[in-house]
Image 1 (cartoon, helix red, strand yellow):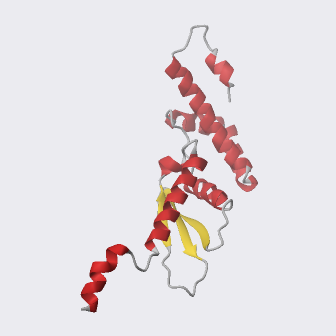
Image 2: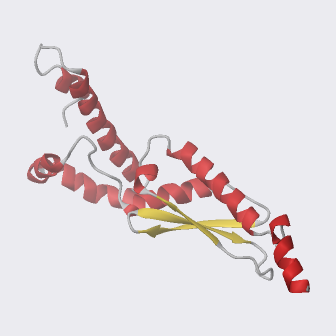
Image 3: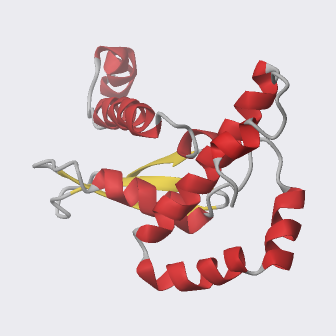
Length: 168
C-alpha cells in the first residue's frame, strides 16, 4: 500500500483540495478496517491474505469510492456493544443486536417481576460509521432513556379527563 505522502507527491503539480481530501479519506477508511481487525486477531489473517493478493486488492480498490470500505454489520454491532459496556445503571440492562445494516439497542428493566416494557431504538449505518459515533451514541442513548422513563408513567395530568369518564 503506497504511503499518503507518496500518493500526494506522485507529481510535482499542486493538487486540488478535494483530491487531497479524497486520498486522506481513503487512507482513513483503510486504517479503520485494519484497526478493527487488530481487535479481532482471528479475522486478521484472512484479511491480510486478501490485502497481499495483488489481484484481489486491485479488484477491491477499483470498486472503492470516496466513502470506501464500509464496516460490516458485525463490526457495527461490536462497536455498539463496546460502548454499552461503558454504561452501568442500577435499574436497567443494555444490550444490542444486528438489525439489517444497522443495530438495534435494547433497554430492559432489571427487575423482571415489574410489568415494565422493553425499550428498543435503532442506530442507522450513517450514525454507526460517523467519526464522532461515541458522542452521538451517548446523545441517542440519553434521549432514549428519557423517552423510556416517560413511557413508564402510570398516570399523568393528561389522563385526568379519561379517568373522570371511567369514574362516572
